[in-house]
Length: 421
Image 1 (tube, rainbow, N blue to C red):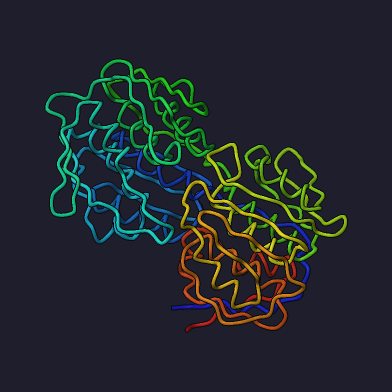
Image 2: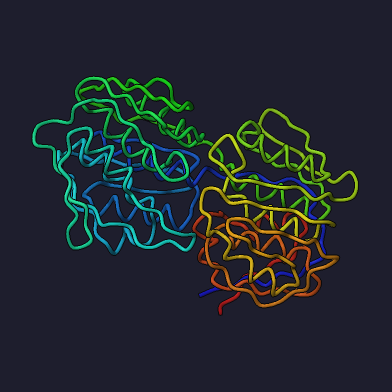
């Protein structure tokens, strides 16, 4: 394993470019299985999760080649309906092949995804939606076995439950519905930009979809889809991470190749916290204009504040004078970064689904351990402003979702190096 050694104290100043969206490209890769022809996907980040999905697609009998940010997928007509546990267990998004395989082959056998550090994330809504489309579903020996006796048929589906809409469930049902006979209506659909990106990809393939980006998506099934060329949207979570990096280090950073409209809730909170955020067509500039101010943050489904930036916001609040309250409404147990931030001197108290953060004058470098992807990013941000050196261990979590993170931070003036454990 590897670790990051970070020397704190440097301001982040300069320009940085955002990579393609991890959360958008993974379902799009699965959607490419809906056609026999080749799809060419551009702006693909070279991440562990992307490489895992490449291996999974190859295991299904399709061809997949990733070179220099361009991914070519050719499913052909010899797809296999079996997705093994050894691949699915490492990444929850692997379950996105369930809908495409069922729609394309009439059957699928996909391992249940493993546990998740940020709390329970069942796939009940995925199965509810596919069953409504006409699939017979059986769970046996850790695998989901689905089969359509005849063809899938469109219907009205309510994807309700839990803390709101589910992005991956919306993706899976949408991908199955595009080849189902007749009209499908998905109510309580997720509205995230990554769902819209998937719908745009499917439309280019020949699907008939309306309403994406709203809680009601309407699909008119077609008989066949074609391979296409498509460019994935920028990663809004990576962009947000650099925005908080500029804020916590009293920096001045221009973040390019991003979509500001995808982060309006985050920009609003940064304004409240005392940052100046200038918006451009495909960029934002973040710099501090005065003292940091405490803010309260509540995570909710898009377009509200994203759960994937909760930990990064908390890192900023640890050095913000006053008391901030961060409430997690998506994954109430998503606070595994709290004790590690505490090792660096942060004062954070948990009360149910809320964290009460008392800002301190300084953090100090310490050995810390990453527990999940976004917690890792929070520890890196805290390390940038901490006195002395911080060792962030288990950074394979970071490599799942951030492309060339240390290189990009160093280009802004940070002092980050990667070492073997």
